[in-house]
Amino acid sequence: MEIVTVGSYAEMSEIAAKIMIGELKKCPRAVLGLATGSTPLGLYKMLADAYKRGEISFRGVRSVNLDEYVGLGADNGNSYASFMNERLFGHVDILRENTYLPNGLAEDLQSECRRYDSLLDALPRNIQLLGIGSDGHIGFNEPGTSFIERTHIAELAKSTVTDNSRLFECGQAVPERALTMGIADIMSAEKILLLANGKNKAKAVWGMVSGQVTEDCPASILQRHKNVTVVLDGDAASLL
Ligand code: PGA
Image (cartoon, rainbow, N blue to C red):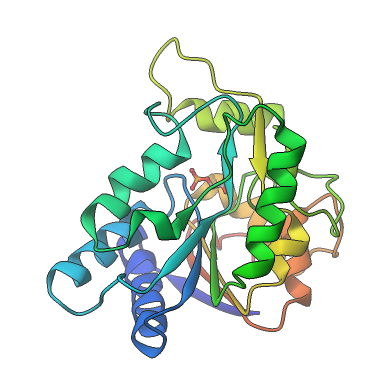
């Protein structure tokens, strides 16, 4: 695991952007595993800017996202489909038909999980972008999730619902279930890039980097992946 510690959120985003841009230049038809949340916002802005400067194109790129809330569709501003459209896809030349997220509105959620597994099998990720939850989750794989789990319906931990409520407008309930890529799927990516900033991530980051590999801290499995880069700001790295 390569750990890079920097002084600020902006620097963290810049390093992540350099890595992603390098990947896209090397492999213009790359399959990107993408993440949502506040952590990658700076990175996505930088990727959109690099596209506007003509430095990179997403024309040949395919993307698969980690997760989606159950019950929310692209027309709901709180869905991850909507997040991706607003924060990245709407600003670059990616073909919408080449962007994939689990369908949180699927009538049969189990079949939707199996459909997503097939999609993941057909689209091995060149690089998987990750954030980390304050409880050590990756994607929505909460503590206790089996390391061999594939796409599944996740019951969100109370702390995750609380953490995510800041992104919802006042009075709107945070869904308590999501469809998420499993840990086995995350581990099958060729390369993993995990970003973390802020004091509230320090304990989870410690567990991921220095703790035992245990399902109690899902991110700790990344110690067993052969190509992981972790970019941290000083606060997230403060317990290392
Ligand atoms: P955040 O979420 O980027 O909004 O902190 C990260 C995560 O829960 O994986």
